Image (cartoon, rainbow, N blue to C red; front, side):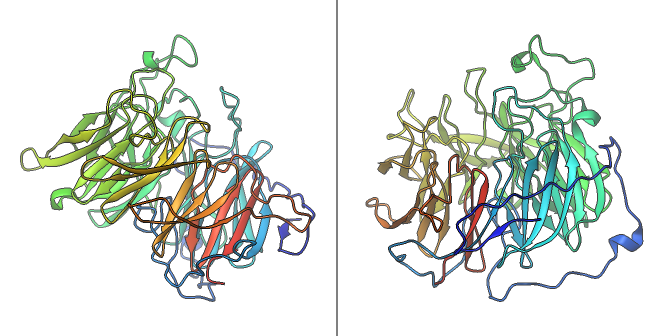
Length: 477
């Protein structure tokens, strides 16, 4: 039976895995037209507010428009509405029409559950088989957050299986085995860049980092990705309706950073920071219109934080080598762009003197950058920088590699080890307005490490993921 915990019980239930026997196929699987045209689901929200249908929210910037939050919190922290047990995985949920889509792994299946967002009650579940094993010993669950678009739910598993289901009941509409289709050599930690959707030429495209190679491509050892070469499917766009490929672009290998949908210089673009470089792509045609290399020279390194739009400029930030760079975007012919550095992190900079983002995407608030700087939990700092100059304003330690979401003038911060802070988004000093450690009825922490997913905020609730558990808190009471 599905386990839901409300604030009063103290025991932990055990969720069971629903199994689905359909094997992963290399071609798109399409269900009947009657199934696609089922009745549209009604909203289940009892409050006004905005949904959070994708990684980094409705605008892809990690910012909620929630106002009227209960600030400061009570001494015990914000009220816990419900909790539910989770399997393996690191990605956060998404919320749409009063439904929370939660993606994890139980045994040998990646499981997608649709829960009533305000109560945690399960509405439906569906699963995909997986045999993914992490070569560095991390768990084998999903890294990429689900995505809701046009009453469909998309998931991108650690083994590269891209699945599209109907939001109303989880019925499978199509799926693509990108690893088999595009001859993908496994990345260090499997597939982890969340998909995005973009409107182009009158249809909706699902765009994912794939990073395929020639069929005969083999590394000299499983971790020697420096010997692997890409072909033509770094970025691939699929039709949302059918799952058929529309275009493929770039010979870059994949990273863990979700592409950014933007319109610099008034031109619609997909800005995908891939394994070696940033790639700008025209959504309608798949034409690569600009590139910029930004990557550590170390073999064992990744790009994981998504690109951040700072006005008409673009921020890239990583933690293994060069750190951050702010890029001016300039026209290069009628359809091309070139990227020129405005500032970049000083050579061998420390986490306190610049921004060295690991996987948590920085936020922009009133001309300042807020984020976590540092590769490891021990050296990581919460930092604030002036966006236009890169000059540090303040830093704060103690939260590890924290993730955050902006709401109502504050940063809702989840520390790597489960601490919650509500930090004023002000550049003159670090100011924690509230702190809390959420506990169950027996005083045991509800959020256990690693807590690596950013908070999801929708209709006055926040959804927080720790190891083995998802927690819903009320931000308005």
